[in-house]
Amino acid sequence: MNAPHLIIVVPCYNEESVLPETIRQLSEVLNRMLEKEKISIGKILFVDDGSKDKTWEIIHQNSQTNQLVSGLKLAHNVGHQYALLAGLEWASSHCDAAISIDADLQDDVNTIEEMTDRFIQGADIVYGVRRERATDTWFKKHTALWFYRLIRQMGSDVVYNHADFRLMSRRALQALIAYPERNLFLRGIVRLIGFPEAYVYYDRKSRFAGESKYPFRKMLSFALDGITSFSVKPLQLIITGGFIFGIIVPLIMIIYALFQHAHGHTIAGWTSLLISIWFIGGMIMIAIGITGIYIGKIYKEVKQRPRYFIEEGANL
Ligand code: UDP
Ligand code: MG
Image 1 (cartoon, rainbow, N blue to C red):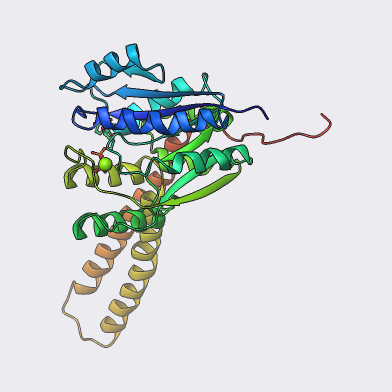
Image 2 (cartoon, rainbow, N blue to C red; image 1 turned 135 degrees about the vertical axis):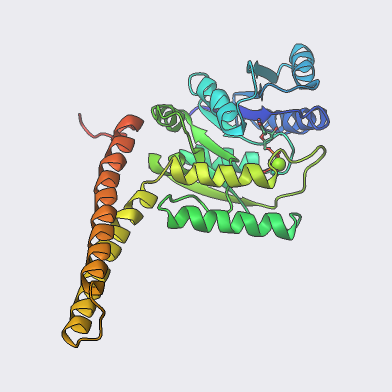
């Protein structure tokens, strides 16, 4: 294979304080790889996610003087995931591989070369996995841990300790944009694609400058979004609950009530009342569960996800 054309996609929201340094470090990495002829073309694509500060000015100015720098300016703030998607979608028709990385230099830029090596060796998706979170606060570390656990339990196979620092080949990018759903949980979807994967490990640093744009409130809604836009597990839980609380428990209660009735431990009306309450409650729960099955199907239909991707063929 010829040396690939690489694009580094960087979503930016109010990042004026780190951008000059980000541009410097990423240019250095690209120049190093260009010198070694590991890549044939290298570009950094900054996606300005409707910033209110000088972010776009900085990107624009640098794109005039530094030929490695390019930029997309989104019309308004759409959030990290969609800003990233905008960059990746553009990259999917302009490069052989794209690497997504945050603007704040928390992910080790030197890992980019290793990711590219893995791509050259044949991986379509290379996950950047952080070794430890030494610099995060106890709170951030643990909430993140719970986040991964919860999401996994809800049936989405995210890579532990992997954020959105990853390389994707052109065909993996094209597979990604074949998912037309509105609520896109990138980390979950990427795992569904299925082309050859690889992992590289790095130490995560603290933010170079500026503040986290992910306060706890946003993280919580991100976790909820991750689950509800990805899995029908919560709906399936209603069905399971429906069977337990709608059939098994009422049956036990009905047997118990009749038993008490037969032994005369009851006052008039108690048995019929208790049985009716459990019966009605159980019927309602089962009805909700059945509705849930249909809603789950509708949910899957409206997503219109691709059903398969072909990895290879032989003698076609
Ligand atoms: N970001 C974005 N749009 C937003 C919020 C954040 O494009 O609405 C970018 C931000 O500029 C950064 C990346 O997403 O490059 C990750 O954000 P941040 O570092 O604040 O998140 P954290 O690392 O604290 O989870
Ligand atoms: Mg960050």
